[in-house]
Length: 183
Image (cartoon, rainbow, N blue to C red; front, top):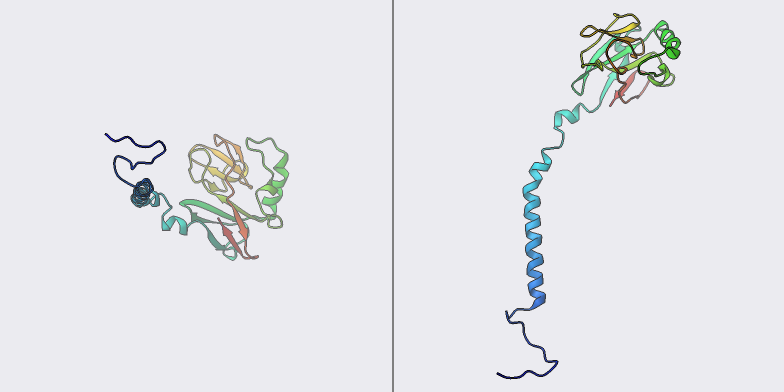
């Protein structure tokens, strides 16, 4: 056996260049990560909303189709949507009731857009079990859910019955005096 001099370098016993071996390890890890991402993408992509859901994300509606004192029910995001053209009497009654004790207190002005108090836009699902209330019934001149007896006023606020919350007001904006965009 030959003695090696102190401080002399020797080749590794396995006979490879360390920098080349590191490169091969990094390249193999990168290829594995790319393959895993390629396999995972279809599973991740299927969690995105479908095209028909995205199409229903917002809707525009022509308000000239709703005479004063009437409402139109639209389908939006799979739920009924009430667009009501309130009369002055309905607005006055809703404003007068702002100070009454309620389960879910909210002023009428917080449920409509400034300067557009006659237009009330609501998601038409009872907040108790999701039934669709009808207008004109009940004790407060607004909506009545016949399934379990929830009474809403002319602003869509819960006044009597098992429903815990007011009818929801979706996000909406007026594009013009005659057109509203919901969603």
